[in-house]
Amino acid sequence: MITLNQVTKKYGQVEAVSDVSFSLTSGKTTALVGPNGAGKTSLLHMLSGLISPGSGTIHYLTKEKDPRTVIGFLPRYPAFHDWMTAEEFLQFAARLGKKSKKESRIRASELLELVGLEDVYRKKIGGFSGGMKQRLGIAQALVHEPKLLLLDEPVSALDPIGRKEIMSLLNGLKNEMTILYSTHVLHDAQLLCDEVLMMNKGKIILYDSLHTIYQQYDRPRIIIKSEYSLRSWAADMRLRYPEWDILSDENEVVITGSNLPELRKNLLHEVSKKNLPLRSIKFGTSTLEEVFHEVMNHE
Image (cartoon, rainbow, N blue to C red):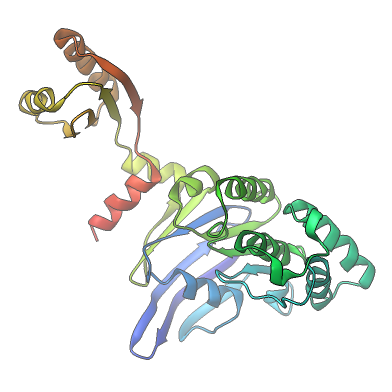
């Protein structure tokens, strides 16, 4: 869908994006993650055509003369004409995308319903909340039916209900277009994305499928909770099982090991032998957030 080759972008002496090369997989949803200042927004702005690379090339696999006609983009801080209604703005955006008046009316109506703004379609945008503007921004990005959707923090202004609705919307779009979106909400990325592109200090430090990343960084773990103190028990377990990584506070112990079946068997034996008064015991594996911290700590 799109290929970058040694792309670099500087602002004065600051190198925001440094020698970046990758290809987005067509039809996949990719989460762009990294700390503040990693270069994510600069990368999205170059991909959308808003700014040009300082060096390197960006190649779009499309027959269109202007690649921007197949790109939908939601910036982190979308701007609107506050005196317009939501309906007027979407029709205006559709007309800029070279749709007819009739097509623009139909498309605006469809998208207002899709993003949950059908009840306020004639309300002035100036009276919209941040979450409502975020929804309208997503509708604007979709108005010309793009093949590549670029989103910069698409759920940052939404409450938990709104975030869940938009994530459900994006999940429904996965089969229709290629999606690249930046986010700090790694739990959402874990549920939605097929691939993860991780940046730090302007460089790509990890880019792979979510499945492959989990295989590489999987750390089976067990979480034990109790109404009583587990500190002394955890200290004893560290001495007896130095191969386990054991973290503990007063009432919770997190144990990580490389062999989950063996870990589970031995741990259940130890818990039973000590007759620990447990509130819960949970078996799991590493989350994307834990992978993120592990990768960053090795940078």
